[in-house]
Image (cartoon, rainbow, N blue to C red; front, top):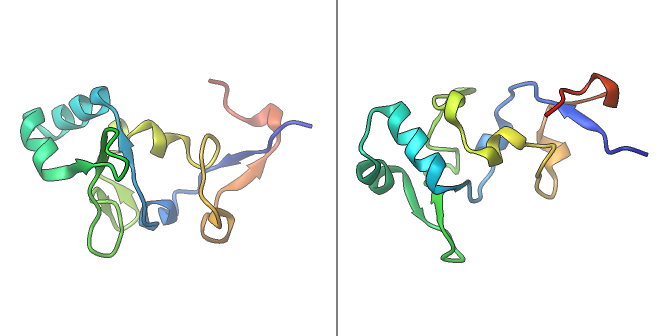
Length: 113
């Protein structure tokens, strides 16, 4: 039996969940460029060292929302990190089905990578 594929409904609830949004070096460069910022400035303003000290994570707003979330819109959608692009199909968190509005779709209707 194949794993179900979930189609995002853009509810943004995953962007409001506390936790780390890991960013790679390449993603930092891409996001900084998209924002028109030098990498060093982007890094200082929008990232912090991960709890395990193995790389960087995006900072959160005080309410735990992603710093790049405005309402239900991602202000860096075209360059958002792989972690965000893959939710909930390539990663998820305990209890995600209680907050996420993604709908399961037939495996043959799922987009191909």
